[in-house]
Length: 262
View (cartoon, rainbow, N blue to C red):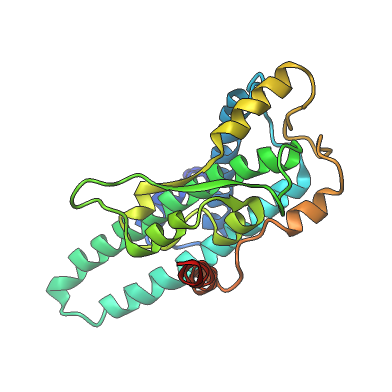
């Protein structure tokens, strides 16, 4: 292998974090890197959830339909990060020369850290709801089993108004939780301090059902234990369209509903 080929291969295998820190030079390479990390995080969390629900913790994502969905998510993330990062770098070029290096380094560090957190959170969240839905544990449209937990409470780390409003609307169906997505907004401390969790009573009962043979947990195969068509369930488990603005519209509906009740 020539030195050029070795360098090309090493770049293609670089993490999303490393590629953004390097200036997002190749959007397709970034997409593929995001997909690898997203799939890895998804499988890691799925194994964790499988074991927590009473299974043996064995999970390998063989389902092509889910791999395709994760690749689509990776493409959307790569497109968004490439666009916003390059736009910011273009603006930095208008700054005085002596300010450009520091501004560029700070921008790339911020975008890389933000993307790394979003990818990991997305993988964990999707694995969590998929295990419930594709094992047939919860009706994605009817069962209100998902809770949005705000974790930071001490001074300087308290939840923001948006996250508090979403948490106040607990519990949610899987359909509503997935429409809101793994994260409620970018550029806030709650990006690192809030997460979704399944109802603890549901988890406890599922462990009993698995132990007694009433429920079989999904192990990542194309065919799932849940009744009905996978495509129909998946259609109900989509993030709101329109990026962060779409998520905000979903949040506004929750806030208005809470206002009517009070």
